[in-house]
Length: 272
Image (spheres, rainbow, N blue to C red):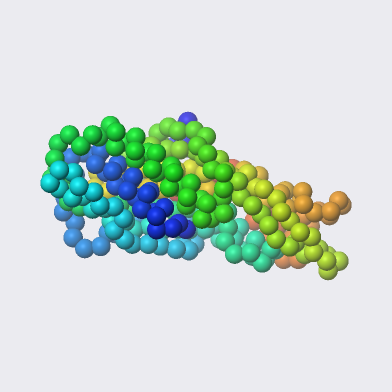
């Protein structure tokens, strides 16, 4: 796998993800965490590309607690979830739908106490395997909560994030059900029930202080093409969307998936 270079979930699901990421922190450099007091700071998406997205959810909680010898480690998280504005609004305008298959999330995890207070020999190699498996499984659950099903890992590798740290990175494939009633120019409606092929990217890394988890998902084909396949012959989806809504809505649904891939890739590596 060659990731691009630098430039909503249930409680159980989030606990699984963050427990894994918390364990990843144990694999970082000993003595790097220090002793932070108070709430965990929000992660920051430093890329200007986030201006095209809007935050739709957030969380702050204690998500992981486990004993290592005489020491109990607690992981606290702050998570921000975003959707791509133009696509969400375009789907609302055409299908009267809420939400979007184009999503992104960023999480910061703080481990307490500091790593250098943990006993030696906590099985770090085994924990790394468990962390990576938990991160992928929980990301699948995050995607399911966004309507993306049948998620499978397509590739795995590493990438360098903007801060200079090395992240374990995954590319995943899945499906999004696009269902609804699509209005036609003659006043009738056409039922649309199509499967949209999806791609996702996920990264997990230790930044020397905290564990960072970031990822997002997007369709592999323009949504306007998927809609067009469900419409009657001789009905051009882009023309109909332009007439029913406006050219900007049609343009959003016709977005090249490569643009979403670039956005998610650059957002992922920009999280701090």
